[in-house]
Amino acid sequence: MNGMYFNEEHQLFRDSLKDFLKKEVVPHIEKWEETGTIERFIWEKFGEMGYFGLATPEADGGLGLDLFYTVILLEELQKINSGGFAAAIWAHAYLAMTHLNKEAGPDIKAKYLGASIDGKKIGCLCVSEPFGGSDVAGMRTTAVKKGDTYTLNGSKTFITNGVYADYMIVAAKTNPEAGNKGISIFVLDSDSKGVSTNKLNKLGWRASDTAEIAFDNVEVPAANLMGEEGKGFSYIMEHFALERLIMGINAHARSEYALEYTMQYMSERETFGRPINQYQALRHRIADLYADMEMCREYNYSVAYRMGKGEYVVKEATISKLKATKMADEVAYACLQFLGGYGYIEDYPMARLLRDSRLGPIGGGTSEILREIIAKIVIDKKEYKPATKKQLM
Image 1 (cartoon, rainbow, N blue to C red):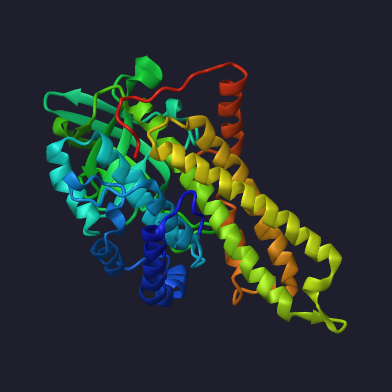
Image 2: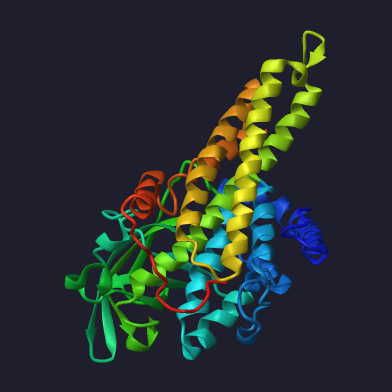
């Protein structure tokens, strides 16, 4: 336990969460990985434990806990070796629900937030598009206002929870001529007329449902606008900091799991009469990988601490995702190699972990886009500012 960031209450929470995951989740993981469907009962079990309400203020029915409870949740989810299951959980709690927590008015919160905390409604965030990807400002989906409704047309893709979600948080252009200043955020029920979804077949994250979604003249009540019209891009950018930090934390956690598993295997696997963890070439490679993981983990903790204090850490969170996901890919590749033929067998964890890890440098903004964002900040001196004065967490 790191005393700089975690206290005794945090450790008790971690122990309880580990026990919960071992008893309630792990027995079902292989089935969910095979079928690509996470059964609904587990969402309500998470809700009963309060795991979806960690970051929601007590006034809105949540627990209002500090950000390191979220760090613990993310870390332990990575250590059950199902990136897809972990993604489904955190995409609901920290993509969809973050917008509910921050931009939703009382009526929207009354309809969606409480049910989301309880695990009775599942949400998804719809930003990426087939022609836009990481280019949020280039989105083509539109929402044209006519009286008391908006007519939504367009498409989204790579949407985690997109098939099985009960509601969608959707970004669309309400003023296409205004560029990124013309984007707004809406919430709508997934079964609204004109909404259709298609499940995508992925390399990894097999347990989660990832969808492409089409909106064909979907009528959205004006009351479903979240926050202010035209402020959607700023809201998305503000919350991207959290998403990128989540991806960074996921990366160091799964790398820690991979290294622990691999070191245990190496202590038991013998060649030429001695364990393979006694070969200098392998020992030194493990040392390098472990050092890289530790550096990323400590950096991520420091960024989480600053975010928890209300600092706007867009640059730091972007660096977290860029460096930690690259490190995690290297760890996964090397650990599979250390296991030799067993690393290539699906009965062992490394094959799945390698596939799941590969999404890290892609999802939530590709590494190439992140490098350009960092370059704009450090070279061009571009400043990114929050949409509101509200703190993130």
